[in-house]
Image (cartoon, rainbow, N blue to C red; front, side):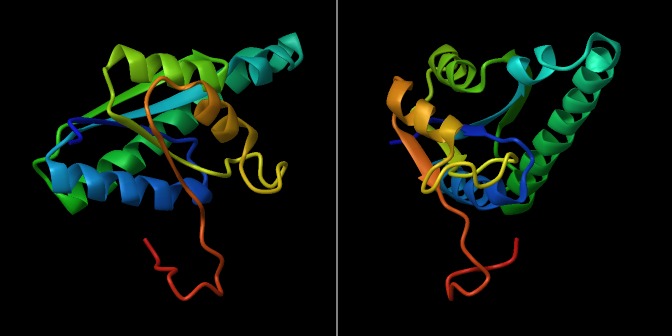
Length: 154
């Protein structure tokens, strides 16, 4: 049913549950996992010239860390999972949708809130745009509150 799963990560705490769900689905279906981190070009371009390169480098480093967390979670769940990681730069929603097309993904998994926090009431703006524009199904996974009895620490 699932051969290729794309996990969009930004390294935030809220995406960890989405990573866990995606890895679990991949392990159950023996699917490939493609983890992608997008350096938001709008964020980079809106910074002053004198710090732009430093910001881009810091975001690249954050991306590598976030992708490492996905790799670690996948390896811990099932060491035989095939993991591919990639850092890209651009507008997040179109980049995620484009990446899903490129790798012929069966599903994209992502959190409903990103590192920009609670700027949207129910679903993050990037997640909303991906849901609306992605050519494959999108599995959005919300972060559970501390009070939710289903919450587990990952």
